[in-house]
Length: 255
Image (cartoon, rainbow, N blue to C red; front, side, top):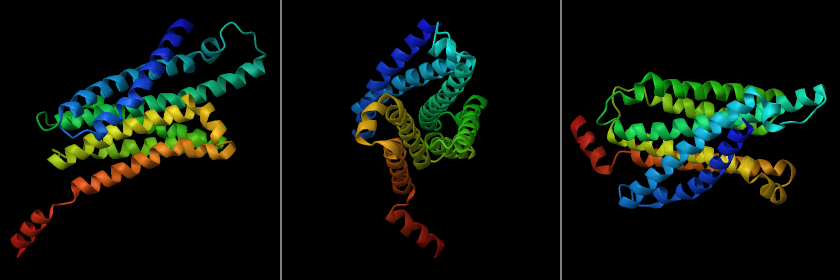
């Protein structure tokens, strides 16, 4: 079991590192271009791998925290219980991030297909995944508040907000072209928030601990969601705002 867990973690790290770089190519490339489409497919595939490996690695630790994280070690029962609780909490957080990334990528891709496949966002599988994210967000947020863990509290709230936003986009009978685009870009940006959050909180934690010691490390944890949320809000306003010509036509019609 430990070998399988190590394989999952190694795959997660290697593919995750590639995904962090790939994220920016479709973001900066011209929308609809070959580079945008090709890099987008590579990024979404990588993120599926990242989220799935993180999901199963987290489930394994939740099921047997000491056996997976401290195999073969003889520990005092009190110490073992304390470590098991700590390992389970961190794994629950990673599990939540894995569902956030997977559901965001899936939502973003399905939004584009909604034009030709009406109702694709309303499937029990898709909605169930979004609701699961919300439940995990509530659970992690409560744990964060009770244990005064800032990271868990913040990202529990972010996951709840993301769940609510995606579920709301599944309610209309059909999304118009602008709404599909906003849902697509929002989902992919949301997956990037989850990926960079995991990197800053875990993969790059030692590096940022030296640059931002103590409570200042919170800055590295929230920088991705802050930038991502600003980008999503600006993008939503940009694509949802009617063009001047459309506004004039609507005004003339009312007159």
